[in-house]
Image (cartoon, rainbow, N blue to C red; front, side):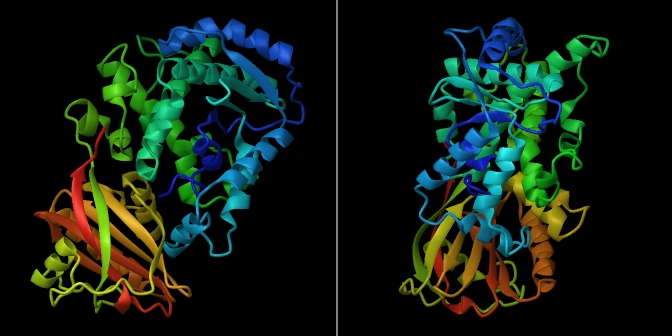
Length: 452
């Protein structure tokens, strides 16, 4: 999914901010001052250096922010957003049944980020910010977390890391997991040692990847988060908890290693299963490029699969962008509102929400995807191409999505299995009621291994 808007803290992170959430404000919080924050950061710097393995190369700049100031900054960032269609991300989630059609995602994201953030590091200003109303009992952990981000930026510019995920929401989330995971792991190590609850042995922490992400989100304390759609809640916690688990495993297998350079994940699959997909044998996903579009006739409606598992005409359509007669047709009225990558993590959440609680395994075997939200002026249609490691994995997912389509009122669509360069691709069409999917364009599909 696109990085802007629908991911928690998305507006902030689109600007390159690295932060920490889920430490809410308290009515009894002691007001933080600039002088006390500066002294606290100086005191915590040696511990942050030791826990992260990153020695400071220049001074750490700090500043206090109020929530009013944070809200104003987020509004300004949103206003400066150059995206031509900032509501498209919300429409994609709505088409997939993951968000209510009435949700105003932009305003809601700003309010949610304002509620959630406890501190953040801004690489453009080279400054660590902490919110003035963070509870006293949690403030030192917040400051240490943000110091690690400031140290990261002194070794690998965080702006450049964020830039690697532009145009690919899954990659952007994986990069955030590396950035937040290192800082969160250092913060957890600091907390267990301060509290004197370290486990016996060399590693004071349990396996962080096995801890449910929901534990980071106390609903009674954070009302906006509690009311958020599951995909937003889970993607909020993913960079912190799953990222910390990823970095923890990386450092267990390769002591002293950092989650950057050759160890930087380029997909959420590599964060979720780092041993199989990254650390033992690097398995980068395949990028799906959708080329010039040509119109072609669609016949599968309501979840029917045109061509079964991909007849000769279907394979030709997918590989060449031509219609079944071999001629190239005009693109017609359809315009692309947004194009992006969903990724294995978001695909897992989608299946859990829309199919069954036992369906997470259906996302395994994902090797890349690309979707477009198309509009003809009156209707929106989601067209989604998902590449699979095997025909069997593609078939299982296609069967599941057919059932999802059949259970959704006011929708039409189709599910196809295609073959592109000898690989199995599932093509999903999920349309609003009344949309004429017979005029949808067919793009040329090109597969390419992800560049690092």
